[in-house]
Each structure stands twice: as structure tokens, then as C-alpha cells.
Image 1 (cartoon, rainbow, N blue to C red):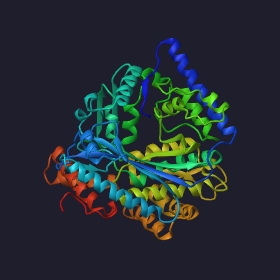
Image 2 (cartoon, rainbow, N blue to C red):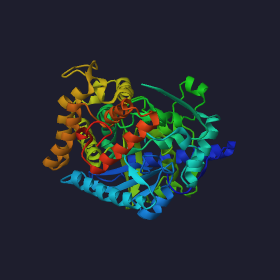
Image 3 (cartoon, helix red, strand yellow):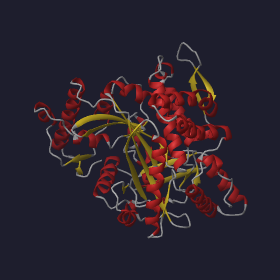
Image 4 (cartoon, rainbow, N blue to C red):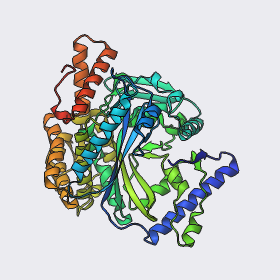
Amino acid sequence: MGEKVTAGEFDPSGRQRQRARLRQGLEALARLLAEKRFDRPKNLMGLEIELNLADADGMPRMMNTEVLERIASHDFQTELGQCNLEVNIVPHRLSGRVLDQLAEELRTGLSYADRKAGEVSSEIVMIGILPTLAARDLGSTNLSYDDRYKLLNEQMLAARGEDFLIDVEGEERFRYASGSIAPEAACTSVQLHLQVTPGRFAAVWNAAQAVAAAQIAVGANSPFLFGREVWRESRPPLFQQATDVRPPEFAAQGVRPRTWFGERWINDAYELFEENLRFFPPLLSTSEEEDPLRVLDEGGVPQLHELVLHNGTIYRWNRPVYAVADGVPHLRVENRVLPAGPTVSDVIANAAFYYGLVRALAEEPRPIWKRLPFEAAAANFDTACRDGIDAVLRWPKPGGRSSSTVSVPAVRLVQEELLPLAAAGLDAWGVEPADRDRYLGIVEQRCRRKVNGASWQVAAYHEARERGLDRDGALAAMTRRYCELMHIGDPVHTWPAGCSG
């Protein structure tokens, strides 16, 4: 969200001024697009992973300030909760041995961070939601010591005007009223960035939306929410509800939530930024002084501080990103669908599947978004979050000439149709074939064995309960075993069942 933020201006004239600044930013973006000022294709990707901190017993540790002081690297930074931090991998060109390079960099960086965390009796855990987190662990006092998080919490709570209601029902039901946005910190994800030209943006974004459900089905890793077994990927419903500034009456009227899948396919990137202004009032402002239209008139490139900040407070699962690097603007699609973990190999396998698939689908002569109704893509996303590897999705009939769809098990869809497309997409990027086969093979084996992070966690938890452990003891035992296997690093489909060694 940037470093210099202030509360939104909530007096009548202040609201009008802020809205005018946002419209100026949107007009400047439109001019940049019309003047074709954006960077040329570079096939660049980027990777961010949000992480948890736990102690040797698998319990959460509110220690990110102390851990970050010891890590002392700009690659690691704070996240919303004191039990979180984030690692950022520098952009890479999608070609050659990039997948193995990413894996090696991640292993090296995470191993170093884990050693440093150990100096304060903590360890790094890559998992979508730490199973041992309790609702009491995430109140406003557990937000990171950073003014922007405190300010965001205050503004979102003021906009809602009452407690945030968390209510997710799956195998079990979790219901909780929170006086802050802190429960959002339970969600730790992988964010996959892909730099694209304006002309390619819509095709890549549409493709990413279409495959979000398949990503979740094979990559789910968050089956426990504050001690309850709910959805196989519980991050999306938790994130939406923990950031939902709509009073119930506004939700009943159809006002959009700030975390959402979207409601239509797009034709260009501008549409998403324009929707963000049209549907969502600003929560924060920036103290950066910039007149983006004047910057353009003088031949410069605006940073669009206000527009970028506003965009960062709207949590699309595939988010548009505007940024400037070396004086040249560019656009990215930020894929925010996946949970963290379980291992580095699994993370890179998920990335390979995504980058290959969106490349192939974006270049199909009959695009998926012409054959799959958007409503079906949105429903698929919810289904995959609920059911994970066992999900049954709606997908266009092979060779069909219309928008008719059929029901197909996600694992069969991935094995028979999506993995071959992902392989072709990685070939188009120029990725090393051996690396392509290694990492897509991990996804294929998850489908073959019907095992991903979520299914392993659930099976291990129930095995511990059958051995006589109570709920909390079983969650802790499962989390400890997960951490052991995560550090060994073999992909999750090879993990032995249960909590015992």
C-alpha cells in the first residue's frame, strides 16, 4: 500500500477532493494507455509468499518485529499480523531454468530466515492458515507495529460501523464477531505476478479468472479456521468477511464487497481500475504530492500514488497492478488465489501450473471466456474452496460450439485438459523441459493420489483424534508434523499419513 498513508478525508469537501484526485489518476492512466507509453514485453514474473511464525509446539508467535530485525533483509517485510511476515522474490524472466532458480532462491532465503527466527524461539511455517491459531490470537493489539495497518483497521471499522462477522460453515461451523480486521491476518497466501502489455492484459486476466478454481482444487491448504474444520480452502471466505465494510443492509442491496471475484469478463485493464473507483469509496489517502496530468503534460511518467493506494485496498483474487520501473510504466496481473505452502516444491509446482496455463489459454483461438459463462467461473471458485481436491467443476464441453458446460471432477479436468495446456504454455515461455516436467508432474501426482495440503492436514488431524487426542492436541500434533515434513521439503503428495514419524 505504500509507506506514506493518511486517513481518507471524510468531511464533505474532503471526500470530493479525494474523489477528484482519484479521477485525475484514472484520466492519467487512460492517457498513458492511449499514448502507448507502457513497457514492451519482457516476460517478467514475480513471487511473494506470506508466512506464519510458530513456536516448537506449533503455536503462533507474535514476533515478526523481532524476527525481521534479525533477518535484516529488504526481501522480508511485515504483514498485517504480528504472527506474519512476507518474502518477496525479485522479478525473473520466464524462460530457461527459471523454475529451479526460483526454488533454489526460496529454499536459501527461507532457510536463512528460519535460522534467524530460531534466535527468538520461532520458526517459519508456510501454510494457508495456521491450524493452531485461535480467534483470541487476532485482535487489534496483534496487528503489526506499522501505522498503515492501524490506520486501515480504523478506517475499515469506521466504514462498517459495527463488528465484522465471521461465519463459515463446512464440515463444522465457525462463527465469531471481531472488533477489528485482524482475523484477516490468519490468511497467508502466494501472490504470482505477471507483467503484461496493455493489449494482452484482458486475455491474461480473463484466463486467470477462468482457472482460479483449478488452482484452488489442486493447491488447497487451509482446511482449519480457528480450530474448526470448515472449507478445504478457508482463506477466501475468511478474507472476504474480515474485510467486509458493508453493513448487512448494504450487502442485502447488492453492494459489492471489497474482497470479491468480480462479475464479468473484461476487454481491457482500464475497466478494472474504473470499477474500483465507481464501486468502492476510498479508505486511505497518500501524503505524496503529485498532479498526474501535469506530469504527463511535461513529458513525465506519473506514479499515480492515489490510484495505486486505492487499488491496494480492493482485494480482487486477480488484481490489476500499475507500477513504474526505471521511469517506464507497466501493468501486471497479480494472482492472489493460492495459499502458502506446503513446501517450496509445491509452491513452484503451483506457479508452473498457473504461468503455463494462463499463457496457453490467453492464446487460444476460441478463448475460454467465450465458452465459459462468468457466473460458472465464479461458482467454480466457491466450489473449489469448499471441496478442494474433491471438487466437481463446470467446464465447456470439449469441441462445443456454444457456452454449454458439463460437470467434471477437478482432478480429471486438470489431468486430461489443463496439464497439457500448462505444458504447452511453459514451452511457449521457453522454460526448460526437464523443469516443466518435474513441477507439472507434482500437480499430476496430486491429482492421481487425490492428495494436497488440505487433504493431508484433515487426514492427519482425524488420525490424531482417533488416537485419543482432544481437538487442540490433535491440531497441535498435526501442525508439528506438518512443520517437520515442510522442512524436509518433499512435495505433499509423498508425505506419510498421520502425525507420527
